[in-house]
Length: 80
Image 1 (cartoon, helix red, strand yellow):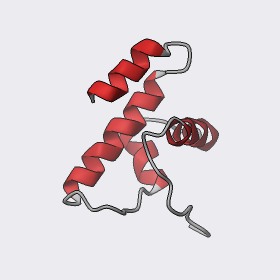
Image 2: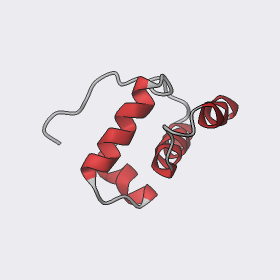
Image 3: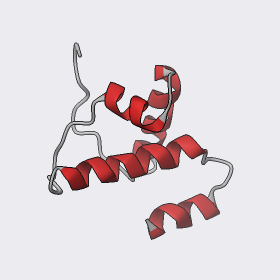
């Protein structure tokens, strides 16, 4: 969490609350799965958990977190 908030302080123009919500929900989900190296992150589950209704808003924020190097996308789901 320190690296995340260091990044937030260094780049306040890039960060919004949805980024933090997605990132920390992802950490919580991974923790519940026993810290598996690879795990699924169902879009509808995350959106419901963080209170976001727009898929485009969610997807944009998730892609930014991936671009910043905090998460690694191994494979996007196909035909959910």
